[in-house]
Amino acid sequence: MVVITLQRNKCIGCNYCVELAPLQFQMSKKDGKTVLLHAKEKKGFFTVKSYDEVVFDDCDKAAKACPVKIISVKSI
Figure 1 (cartoon, helix red, strand yellow):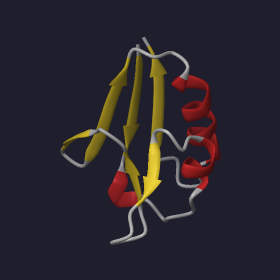
Figure 2: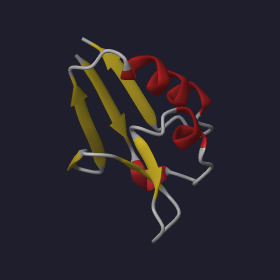
Figure 3: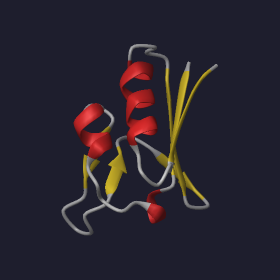
Figure 4: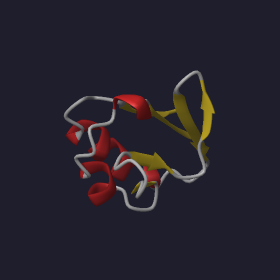
């Protein structure tokens, strides 16, 4: 299982995550920040659990490319 977490309020809208993992992230037209698709929000953290291990590589690249380090990806 892959767990992806995003601290959306700290997003600066650089778009790297969308370019590297377009199936998991997209930019909001309202505020220009990234949205973690199908995520559940809890105390400012948006989280998705996926049983598809294929998403790990793209999301890991997105997490490493994020200049403000607000994306966390774990394989459990």
